[in-house]
Image (cartoon, rainbow, N blue to C red):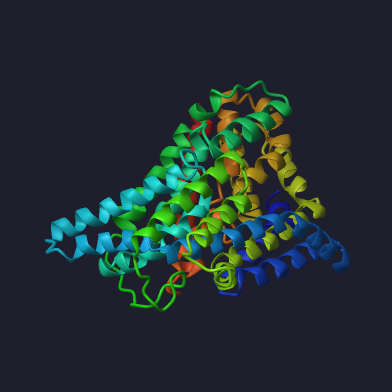
Length: 446
């Protein structure tokens, strides 16, 4: 069983993806190479492999366009002076004489605000990563002034993007817990109700909380020095803060939020917000050219990575190796419950690390995991926990996950935050390890 697992094309393709990324090869190149490698290992021809990859690209095109529009809206907001005003208010607070104790209080208050903003982006104001390129770049100067380690911020943002949907049945959590998790569990033979999901995911959520506390108060608590470099979103010139422009910025944000909430369209939301800026003459019609170009530069990279990740996922599905990998779990563990739970969680980690989406992993694994849990006599509550955690594992720490790409897009606006070594690896260590442990405990005790 070990060699069958270790030599599975999906496992080897994901491993190659992680190695190439760690060697600082561009993530898109790494995805293409790993897709071809996995397809050839599964005895697919090069033509068939790339055909599957191209088919997968279609699924990511809309997402990439969403991100380009979001980037343009973020640039427009930065030019209105709204975020610049926020940063100046914080700088004013910093320029007062702060004792070391007050500086620590300021630092952790700021981290607390960022945590609440990230959590709210999943339920209260469900904009997902859309707030990051708007909210974070103007604060980089504040982070630099207090020598705040941005790896702690990356962990906080990723925590806030993932933990709420794992345990809170609101916003994106309603989709993940009620529609995807409970829906697929019921589909494959186990009667589960929506009220079971938060209970089943409570212990795993404690693992995520432990991870973020370790990151903030232990791993990245020490100062880290950054250079004073211009931020991409605002360019080299300082934005002049004008009251009417700030008001227009606030109105634009409200219009964009309404478009997101009521029309469920990030494209319309961003377009509506930009229209407000044009009407208020914050930007001219001609200026929209530059806004869009800079927006693509700011957020388009995430979109391209997500498109390539969709291609990689399609190749992995086409190989049939995902099904083989999951079936290996059912065939090779016998009645050993503890080993079974660990392997189910670990395979979920591998799959999600490759495709970058916990929402896509659950349907792939539920078909085997649910009957296997029934066979092993695992309770319905524990089954919900195992499948839910197996899907969520790898959302943090995957180089192609939105929950990691989003923080990088904001924190690297001045070119001083590496996607792999400052976002991917820190979030992998601080969330996947405690989540794996907490998920295993939940599967054993529930």
